[in-house]
Image 1 (cartoon, helix red, strand yellow):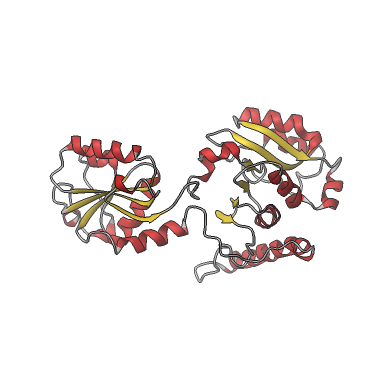
Image 2: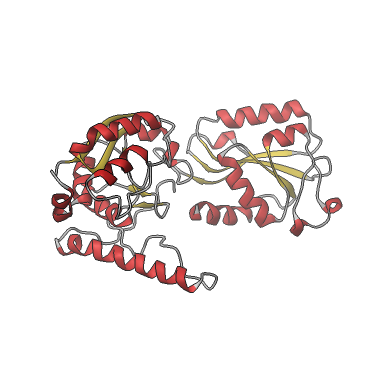
Length: 334
């Protein structure tokens, strides 16, 4: 998301100066459209709103209703999507706009385009080759069919210390924990640190949640104490990743994400910080939330404790000789 914001702001300087209305192609295009409209101080609406001629609301910062440009008075309208590949969405948008017979000139744009798709738009910011995936759609991307994904922290919350008793409370957690996220596509391989002996409960919960998957890899330890003693969550997940040809691993825990990427040599998407973690990534490089003036003391204190905890969990792997140094890899999607 930070990359998208930065790129849209930079792109704004290259776009025509007379754009009075920005229109987003649902759904991802609305992200880019909102950022651009806020930066340009112009109204934003979705494609259906443009075609229907709905009145534009600009909010307090755009001034009184009479000062807000209308579709009829706009000097130029920009219809934007986050990316263009096949051009299908852009062709559909062009057809809808043409049928609306608008009086203002309309340009079509995408922030990112593949090399062979630039002809579908009037403006684009950067050429981004396939394969690619963006942080705002990674959890619903078709690449998940061939990818690995954690369960606790991604599909549901992690168990609390009280629930994680390897007994009745833990079984209750496995059976009743609310669903946090259900992938819209089948997942290639679920890789979890849950014990193998809890496979029946886990498979039953996944079925009730409607999570589709091909394989389920679980921890072979016979007890929670044995698993904690091994302390090999990240290493085992990395090995499961290497046992497949998966292009991506989705992991919630930042320290494990760094370990998995370092050992496997492949990217990991960390849901806790909404960032791609690459081989060689370090904690200092990643987008751990910045401690700003607006945060209360308690929030700043909790953030410092979280960073310290991640460093402690990474220490054994760094001492083992695994190369976790930084490299020059660009974020996926750039």
